[in-house]
Amino acid sequence: MRKRIAVLGTAALGFIAIFLLDGGTAPPAQAQAQAQAQGGSARAPASVAAVAGQIGGQDIFGAYEPVANWPQDLAELPGHEKWTWGSAEGVFAESPDRVFIFQRGELPKIPAPRPRRTPEFGPSLAFPVGAGRVPMRNATTASPPANGGTGQIAEDGLRLYTGNFGVDAQWEHNLVVVNAQGKIIEEWTQWDSMWQRPHSIYISPYDPEKHVWAIDDHKHTIYKFTNDGKKLVQTIGTPGVLGADATHFHRPTFLAWLPDGTFFVADGYNGTRVAKFDKDGKFLLDWGQKGVAVGNGTSPPWDTRPGYFNNVHGIAVNPDTRRVFVNDRSNKRIQVFDENGKYLYEWSIGPEPAQIYTIYMGADHALWGGDYGTSKMVKWDEQGHFMYAWGTYGIYPGGMWGVHQISVDQEGNVYVAEVNNGRAQKFRPRPGANPAFLVGKPVYSAWK
View (cartoon, rainbow, N blue to C red):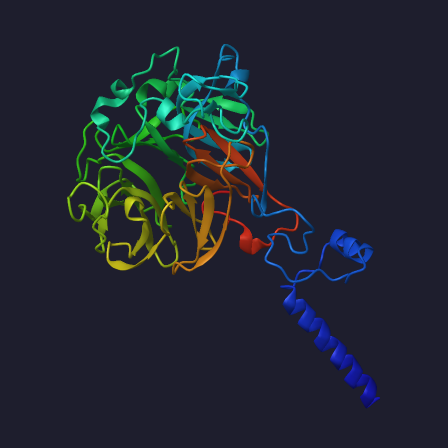
């Protein structure tokens, strides 16, 4: 009897060891069958793949698979056969069946030409390069009002654009809503003439009325709409007038909320501060100073003292600790503050070519960044420990170039707006994906 108990105990310990080595995930039936067919063990080896026990392939898109042909092309709309998406600045998923896309007008729909030699430019040159993989155009420089980085003079607005409207671009469909299949179900074209440079789009998770917030960085303004888009209910900032006080911004970029409705504004491209407002939009305080360049004063390396900024381009909050995470873009770092601007700590996002355009924190409190330089989605924990990264450069479904805003819906689908590729994309979780590799679902406190 004792011998039987000892044998059973040894077997149980063996099963526990296997469970721990495999991360608690049983190998998929396909992996078992293939391993047996190859004369190997039926148990998949421990791995760091996004889907445990995967045979072959690569984690090109991490724990996700891209949803091709999402959303529908603007060229499918009546009268828009010659046009397609412009520079997609913002995306926000209210639900899997209602996703907002915020962009800078429309660009001509131009079919890719066949690769050919271009002796007029040089005997060793050809265009396009890597047909189907390398883009023909940069949507953010092609879309009005052209490039929009640090230092651009917002007061000129669309006058900065040197193209011909109606030929090189048209200022329509800046804000649309699509469903789960990518079909355009709402066209907020009644507001097209108001925009100068659409930047980001949100709904606060703590607002039961689900107001839609839209930032226009060239207008130095944040607009708040009813959920159906029929009414503009609040304007924060002074449209067309720059500044850095209770009623003015200098090209604001992104927003983040606390559970009591308090919100923070990343201000911004030319501003060098974070501004805090109460739930009604009343200014409370701000913090941050301009980080001037070290040395000649006009180029990197920049001033990296705590609380100094160079392009405040991304913000997120932990609703429990109320810590504020700020993407100090040009300084290639994330700075962390308490809710009143006290500096706590920071971490580097990496050397060249790394350059985070936007950050996102879900309910799991992991921080994700969309990296323009590496075309990856990068995960850190709250202390800045690097956890995981996925993504690749390209114009094919799943390739990325210039991720500018990230959103996640209640089902775990991830959406990205790409300024350079000129599109929004949808990624769905792969069957059996390890939750540790997934972008955390958002906080949905006041609404589902």
